[in-house]
Length: 265
Image (cartoon, rainbow, N blue to C red; front, side):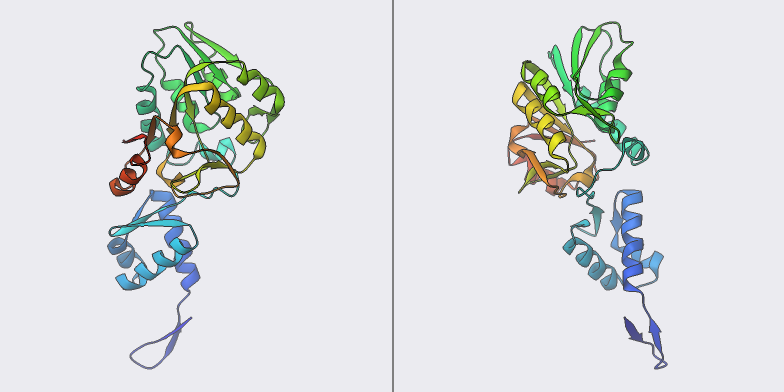
């Protein structure tokens, strides 16, 4: 793209490169503001607004008043190792708030993924609990807790997530009646519900939803608005949604109108 300076000379403006940088900043910081970006990139605010509008059109960010926040890519799965490096303080706060919703539950399902793993680590150790999980990481985190009995679901282990899937997993899970399920997802949207890329993973999550009396979604704000291949639940299926303050309050209100309590920490 070319623009003309006052001197009449044409200078190249790499719009794509600037938008990539905006997206990188948004993913690194969790959100961006128009004024700050305009200063940093040395462009007009209106240019930044156009960039954010274009990125939103591609499903990469969601606009807010004065800025935007990134939408996590739900079209592919990141490994568990990668997830442990992104937005860890926010995920830790989400996990602690989700663990506070335990109530009088005695049997708990904890999903695969880094945020559910943090939920497991935040559970109280001074009371009797039975935790059902397909996640080897969750099972390992709770294995030495004296008052917590851990039931690890059998099945094929996926190396990317270190969790079990397939019919062995879902059949075993279907035999349980679980008080509370902590469920994660690659994407959550008001229109398409909760989604994940892999059909085998989706089946496990769907069975957990069927087996549980109460259901809590715990996830970072970048997952909101993202849509993946396999839908396993609707927003209305959840008692509570726990996320961080990066999700704008107006957007949180829209989700709460579908039924669940939305907690921003």
